[in-house]
Image (cartoon, rainbow, N blue to C red; front, side, top):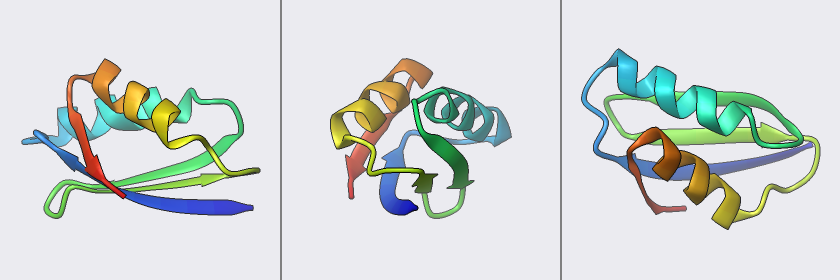
Length: 69
């Protein structure tokens, strides 16, 4: 089990949270995604470490930016 935390910018509402959650959840091996709208926090839990570039691509697909880990 692996957990990684990131910061997402550009989210303003629960729809934003849902979009990021949906895209990141689709990554192979991801078992849980937690998004905190207030802080922009994104926590990804997976069977094995997920590549940061894959997380970035999923967040960008949702329409937001990954500000860092």
